[in-house]
Each structure stands twice: as C-alpha cells, then as structure tokens.
Image (tube, rainbow, N blue to C red):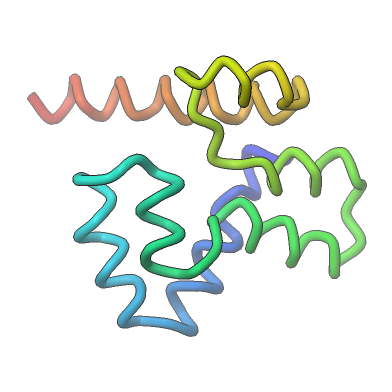
Length: 105
C-alpha cells in the first residue's frame, strides 16, 4: 500500500511549488534522491506523503514506511534502522530505476 501511495506527496509538492518542481527535475539526475528532494522542496517526498496519509487516517505502518523514504540502499546504517516495509519500497524503487535505465539505453 505504501509503495503505491509514495508519490502522493510529490503530487502535492509539485502542484503547490512549481518552481521547486523545476529545481527537482534538474537535480534528480545529479544528486542522490534524498539530497535532490531536500534541495528542491525542503523535505523528502516520503515525508510529504507520510504527512498527507497520516492526516487521512492511514495505518501507522504505511505512514512510517513512507516517512523513512528515500532510503539509500548502499547505506548499511540506514538499511539496519529501516522497517521491512520501508526497505521493500526502497528496493522496488531501485528495481524500477534499473528497468528505466535499461529501457532508456
């Protein structure tokens, strides 16, 4: 459920801050995801999504898994501290990015 709703926060951020969306689209290819999101929006997409879903009454497991995103899978400490749900979302995003990279080449 959390993985499906991950981009809810992105939609809200992009709709309310179009200039920040432009910054994000320029930075996401150059910076790690967390840094690009923080630079553009001042928060991560996961935090924004978690906030909205929390307001809407979603279960805390879903909200917490989103709040941890994006997790750098190469960061052993982040992996160790992340919930299973958060790791599953991070691994799904990494797999999707790999497929996109293959399709783009």
